[in-house]
Length: 263
Image (tube, rainbow, N blue to C red; front, side, top):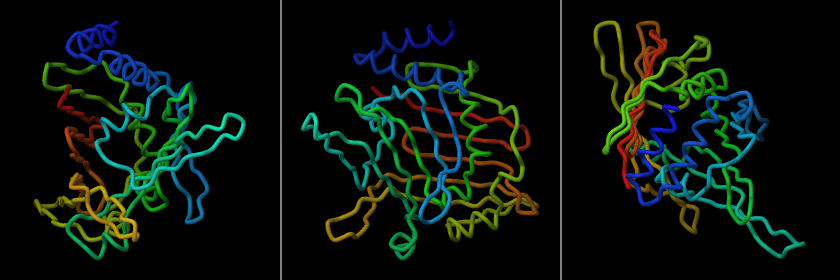
């Protein structure tokens, strides 16, 4: 009932109320995780990759891209001979360090969104992390984080949504270490030292690809901070992108998601 009241308030504040109903239904799927969502490994030519699958797709591509606020560097279509129609079934996104030109060219990261076609709408069906991202964000780490998004502990105002959540469990072996972070992401832009703790600060940017295959930034920065202890184990995580801030405290199994609302 609390969720329904929140959505009704949001609907009254927006000229695009139907968008919030879709987001409400999508958010509810995380509260019935086993029924609607599956996370597992998927074989890939370059190694294993994490696959997040939505059993009953409902989130439209137009709404998803509005909130993602980034452009795919490649979108793929399929042609249906029986109907002589084409529909979009896949978007590919890439990002890389924003402070290293050489790493941007040689070491970018990708994630892919697959869609289900329904009445000329493209609905999010699956998301894939590339094999290198999957080394850091395994199913054992991604699943409890996504499950925690089912929370009634939030503050809503005209300007923002501030949600606090807890994780029921988190497998310590699934957490990336300092050594793994550097091996995958490369050297951090800055390492902040505080007594027996360190924070690795990375900056990335989404990429677009020109006709000649060259990569260039979209000017959509992503900031990632990883706090580690003296042994190099992850203590906390902070991600900032666009109008979203995400914090995760490993020790207390708690976190926070802050979203600045926009019409």
